[in-house]
Image 1 (cartoon, rainbow, N blue to C red):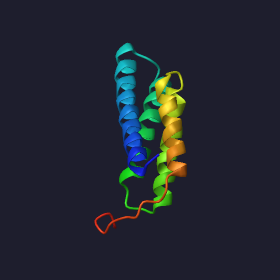
Image 2: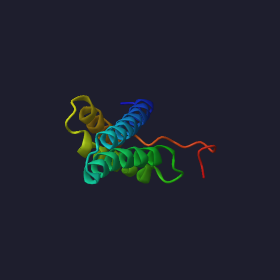
Image 3: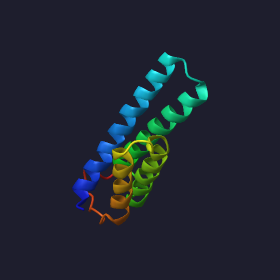
Image 4: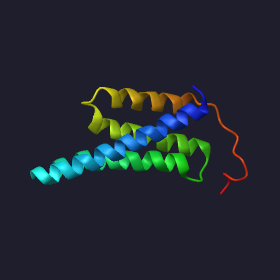
Length: 111
């Protein structure tokens, strides 16, 4: 996979996690679910999205960016394991971030 494709898939996964996390929280609050249920589903999906976004846009080394993206994909995978498409996308993103060749950073990307 090209680095550009991996980056786009990673961003798509973060958006899916954020959307699912927001919907889970809103729907669980509306139906009066337990706080633990809201915390688990909303917390794992939204924190997974946050970690992925930090991995995409933080001004840190490439290794740390990859670790953050992989960790975010794994955290959100816990709550989205019941779906069919999202775990496949998450596993693809984790694999792509592991084997992705390092992209030289431009001066605009430097902190």
